[in-house]
Length: 171
Image (tube, rainbow, N blue to C red; front, top):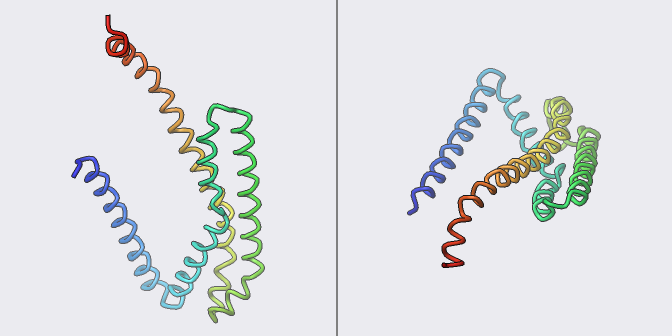
C-alpha cells in the first residue's frame, strides 16, 4: 500500500477514535452528573438536531462547492451563485428552525417527555447558525484551496518552463 494512503487512513481512524471517545465520555458525564432522564432528553434532542440540521442546510453547501469550482474565473457568476445560495440557506434554515419551534409540543408528545420539550427550544436556535456555518465553511475552504493553487501556479509554471523548452521543442 502507498505510504501516503496509510498515513491518511491512520489520521482518519484517529479522528474517529477521538470523536467516538468524546461522545462516550459526554454521555457518561451527563448520565453521572445530571441523571438518566436528562441523558435521555439529550440523546433525543441530539438525534433530532442532527436530522434537522441536514434538512436546514438542504445540501446547498455542496452545490455551492460544485458550481463555484466551475465558475471560479467568472466574477459575476460567482457572486450570483454565492449570494443566491446564501439567501437559500438563510431561508431554509430559518424555516426549519421556526417550524421546529412551533412543533416543539409535538416533539414532547412523541417522546412523552416534558424535558425534551423544555430543552429543545434553546437548542433549536442553533440550527440556523449551524446551517449558515456549514455553507460558509464550504465556501471558505474553496477560497483557500483556490487561492493556494493560484499562489503556487506561477512558481510551478516558471519552474516547468525550461523543461517545456527541452522536451517539446528540442534544439
